Length: 235
Image 1 (cartoon, helix red, strand yellow):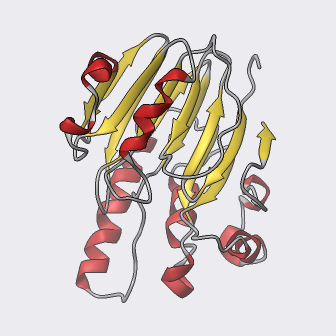
Image 2 (cartoon, helix red, strand yellow):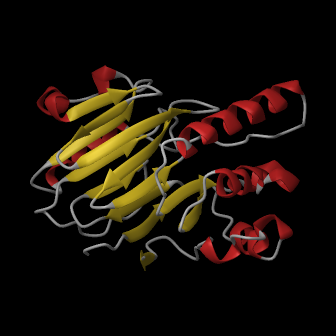
Image 3 (tube, helix red, strand yellow):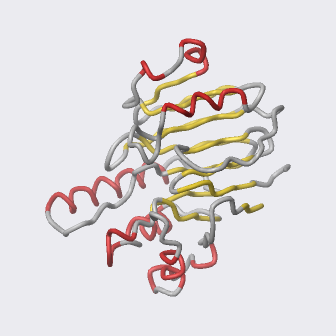
């Protein structure tokens, strides 16, 4: 695993990522998990409290590895965390940097709820957007304000100076003609060696459409097309 990333698509916006030094599980609420290495610290992230990104059942996963940590958005109820796991749990709002155990975590404000995560581990940089996206529904003033905030958060990510190796970004077909908008802006303003679609509600064709659209000009080869849950990639 030295210098490599192993990524497994779980469901919706949930991915299991293994670096040389850590295993990370993002926004798990449903789906089959592959075996994880017990000897590697497992970091479990939840970007916000929406039920398609977080369930209290994640605390039952604490036995999967010898060392487990939870990093939760601060909109998730503290009371959800079992007393036995509270010392292993951090609640983060937007704009924080936390580090320890060879991992560094930065958070960014969502355009919906909670936070996005930028994580450095094992020489790799991983970005998980949560619900940080350009939610452009009708083109009204609220949507335009959302777009401005989204671009401002992307600027903050770019200004970290980090080169993102792997990004998980919403590609939501409910947005119709603007389904690509958030990912396109992320790739043009921040960029990543590999970008995975998420939050696509089981519509696997959305990434295929983007691959053939001019919206992906300049970064088409970096877009990973998913085909099924449990699909694994070595990057």
